[in-house]
Length: 443
Image (cartoon, rainbow, N blue to C red):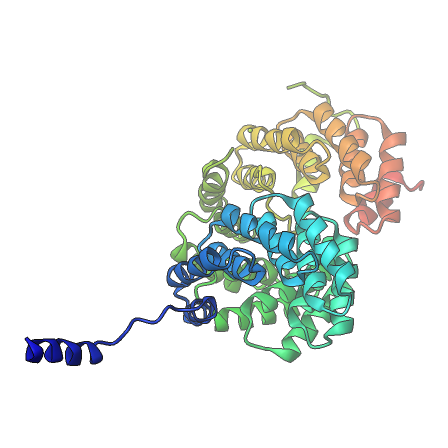
C-alpha cells in the first residue's frame, strides 16, 4: 500500500497543471490572428476577452473591426457603440463606426461620426479623408474638396486625396485643376491605370485628344483588358481623325466584352463617318436594343429648283461632333438616323431622328439632321420647322441658317431666305458664301 501511494504521488508530480489564461493573452492572440487575416479566429479570441472583461473598450473595438472585415456591419456597429459608451473619446472607434454606418447606407449618421472625429483631432488626416470620400459620393463636391485640401495640407504626399480631389473637380467642370491633381498622382506613382484613365478623360474634356490617347494607351499598358480604356481611346482617336485606330479599339473592346453597348455605338459612329452606312446601322441597332430601358408638297418657284436644292443639300458635310452616349441611347438613334439617311432610307432616318428628339427635345443636331432628311423627302415645310428648332437651341448653328435659307429661297421667300444665308455667312459657315453671293447680292 505504501508503494502504491508513492507511485501515485510521483505520477501526480509529473502531470502538468493547466494554468488559467488571462484576458491580455486572449487579446494579444486575437490581434495576431487579425494580422494574419484569420478574422474568425480573432473573433473567437476577442469573445473570450469580453466574457472575462466586459468593460474592456479595446476588445469591443477590435471585435468590431473583425466583424466589419467579415462584412457583418450591423454587428460591428453594435461593438463600436459599446466601445464608445465605455470610452467617450475613442477616436478610432468613431472612425470605424462611421465607415460601417456608411456601408449600411446610414449616411447622415456616418457623417456625424466623421465630423465628431474631426472635432476630436483636427491633426489626423484620416477623418478628413473618409469624410471627403463620403461627401463626394453624396455629390457635395465643394465640401469634399475642402476636406481633401485639409488632407493634403496635413499629408502633402497623400496620392489618394489628390486623386479624389481631381475627381470632384471634374464633376464641377474645373478640368485644369483636376489635371494638376491627376498629374501629381502620376508623379508619385505611375503604375495606377485608373489614374491614367481619369487624366485621359480630363484631357478629352479640354479637347486635347492626342494627350488623351497617350494616357489611355498607358492605362492599357498597365491593364490590357481594360474595356473602358479601349472604348474611350477609340472615341479620342475618332476626334483626332484616326478612324482606323478608333475602329481597332472598338473591335478590341467588343472582343473583350461582346455585350458592350458603348463599343457598338462607337464602331457604328466610325462606320458612319467612313461611309459604311449599312454596316453602321447594324452596330447602332445593337447599341439601341441592347438592354435598353423608351408629307407636304411644295412648289419650287424661285431660282433654287428642286435639283439645285438637292445638290446644295448634298454638299453639306456632317459636322463631325462626337456626342457621348447617354443611358437612354439618344445619340445612337441620332447616328443611326444619319446612317439611314446616307443609305437613302429617309423615312427610317426620320423615325430614328424623331426618337432621338423625343428622348432629348433640346437636341439641336437631331433637328438639323431630320431637316435634311425631310427636305430630301420633299417635306420642305417640316424641314424649315426643324431648322428653326435647331437654331432655337443653338443660336450659332450656321448650317441650320444656311439650309433654312436655301429652302426659303427655293419657295420664293427670297427676303427671309437671303437673311438666313447672310446670317450663315456671318457665323462663318463657308458653304453659305457662294450661295449668298449668287442669290442675294444685287447686280
